[in-house]
Amino acid sequence: MPPSLLSHPCVMRARVAPATVRAPEGAGRGDRRFFAASRDQRGWGLPRPGGQTTTPLRYKGAIVALYTAPPEGAAVVCLDELGPESAKSFPGRRATAVGRDPASGRVGRAKQEIDYGRRGKGYIFGAFRPATGEALTAPYPGRTTANWVDFLELVDGWVPADAERVYAVLDNLSTHRAADVLLFGLAHPRWEFVFQPKYAAYLNLIEPWWKILRSLALRGRRFETWDEIARAVERATAYWNAHRHPFTWGHRRRHRPARRPGIALVPNVA
Image (cartoon, rainbow, N blue to C red):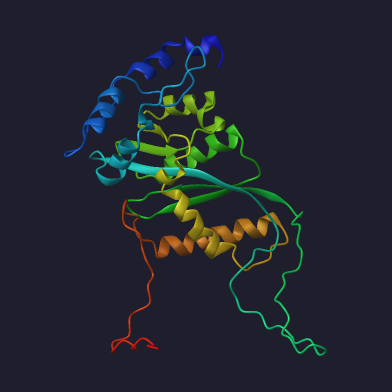
């Protein structure tokens, strides 16, 4: 970042302006210590003079508190990129009929045709609101700062306007901490960037949702162009939003088959 931009009064005010974050009821000592620190400095994870970064939200309990007890009037949004994804054949779970070897009489193995997928690639940028289950996706040819800021503008228009504060949970990718992202934060004062610690992708609830999107849009299909993938992701996102459900921290949806009533089988006794 140029020194002239770092010393700009608007940038300095944005770094030291008090945040409206309060510790929720029942928060532990570590969480209260985090919220006290976050009230004194904003620029979460943004570059500072000397190459240092400020990441008061690096504690797990603080991010979990945003999921379990978000501040009143705030919206929590999980952001990430999926990819790079190539136009290729994606394996599925559909049963495949295989032939029998006439010489040995053995049943052959189901094989998938080799597909190197050199027909175009790109990234899927995504935003996910765990409280409501709503999702937003957009395809981009590359994971650049310009594309990321453009996607943030889409997310800002997607988040309800009545949300006083938007907490964006994301990783520490360099494009997420670029100077253009800082300028976006200055132009949108309700945004707060919450950078997850290293090796803690599980704290970002969009990660399990990526698995659902892959199942809805990509699994068991063959794509000839990147545009086909983009359209498939768009349709899958619309389908999910029509049947969405919230993601609750600490509760896993286990799809277990219903148990048939009856008497258990007697074990074999020699």
